Length: 159
Image (cartoon, rainbow, N blue to C red; front, side, top):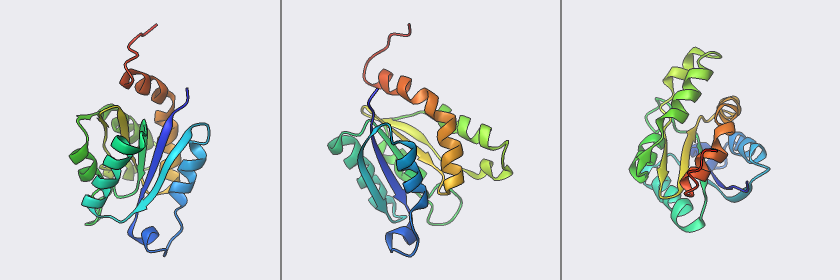
């Protein structure tokens, strides 16, 4: 199944060029079998994140959008709030599974505020900002993504 995917790195430092976007680069590699239709780096600003997510879902035609970064407790971590503001339905099982499984690796997994949800026919999933977190979380949800996207596209056959 060909999947049109967008990647959004949320990072003040990457936006300013003070740090390389290692998490976004890793996500691009993890999604190499799919069609990368957008890759953006935005600052930790809720309005800018919302605008980017809406554009990728409504105009660019991404079926799947990953964000990386901005899901923790820091004052400027607002990715979950921006995501909730633009989705129409939450998909809590994805983030619950990521937290549950990564908790086996680190006690800090319970501090993730990541959310996932649906905007029209686009699935938006928040991932952590660290490459290790991205890799671990992606591996957990990757097997169910084709089925989830098929359901969003209207294929409800469960054979």
